[in-house]
Length: 576
Image 1 (cartoon, rainbow, N blue to C red):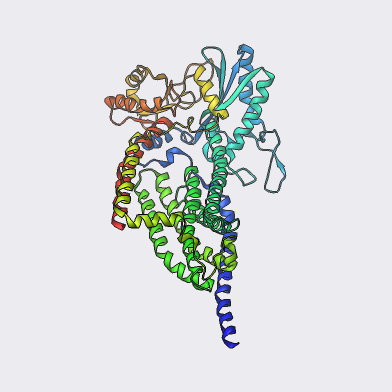
Image 2 (tube, rainbow, N blue to C red):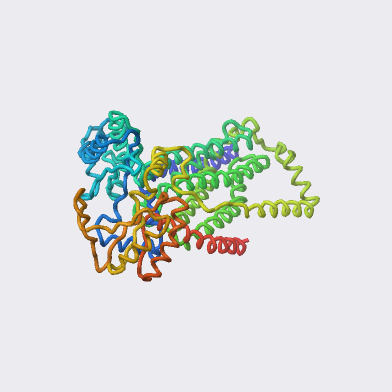
């Protein structure tokens, strides 16, 4: 009697310890869960912020900022109207452009926005425009389209809406599209809102749907794998729940770091985080559950079985996770800020996965007991079916003929590695990165039919004022350049002479409109030639703008590829 009671008390102690572990994890999740839900609010998706300070595009941006306080802080929203264009529609389109700012911010259905308390509020669209910047609407040379340009403040538009739930830019573009569609219907026109602001707003929407779709898809795939592996309708829930809590923990930590500007988070890194954490946590869970199941056949107490299983897997899990973590941290050597951010973001995800699977999952497994493996319950003293199945036969055959199997496996790996030379890693333009034809994508395609592709988003050149004439002549001789216009002193008034060029510290700013879309491969390929032409006049001339940013990002990516991959392989070789 006494012996039996003592044994029961010994069993209660680890059970209560497991319950405490689960309670602690639920408390942690209660804190980090809401933070994970706000991750998208601390994203930084501005390409120019990813570049190193020494890149020409960054140095150009600093020089451009001297010409206007808002020169680097505005992005154009281009509203394109196509259809029957005549003098009347041109005049009405100009009137629409001038009065749009006075209209209130609304949702895509025309309903007013609401504040955090749910009350409707009136916010003029002009609150998001650059103060004093010109708003223009002008027809195309072919007379078949009208283009209106609205200068949007980056800082204001990337802040949160009054409800505090999402960035303002997507909502602002929704409002512009609502009023533009309303105007177009009345005047028999077709409209699309594009430009950098329209594209970025659609990217916000795409990343928002991708994050949720990617998370659900990854979780679904993981669940299917677990069900197939364990052939249990209930066991898969525990590792998947543990992986989910690992994701909320890592997301909460990353939110706090990104909010305080310790790391840079973009939409791509957030998507990678979800896949990485769910995948890694599931991988570690498979190892722990497999060892635990084996030990359940050898030990009457599930607590003893878990203790031995945990000791058996902690070293390989930590070794595996540490290798991946160190490899990810090598990304800190990247020239691009978003890659440097991805390194610690991924490392945090892996560390949280290890911690969760080595603490929460063991606690859940011992709390639920052996029945969680139903219908293939692992009973004490029974033979483990995993040791007699198909994979067991493969393992036995490998043990009998190791040379034959390692030679065959190596040959397959060499063949697959050889196919890597066919990988096309040149990247996609922003337009091509969409999987659906968004309004901004259609608008950009239509814009190219009637206007130069770089309209509203020019390449910008900063140079000494005395070099203006030869520089303009050289730029205009380039077949890929549509127009070259110096930044004027003051605003241009239609019908009046063009104001003189603005001079700051002896420099002027040239707005160079390219014929191709600013983020297209053709436009990006022009940057080295433009820079070489300008350097032949004066090495201090700087070529900037969004197309230059894209080019410098591509160059930095090539540098990172050639530096980081060999270092990661070397570190892994040392660890192994």
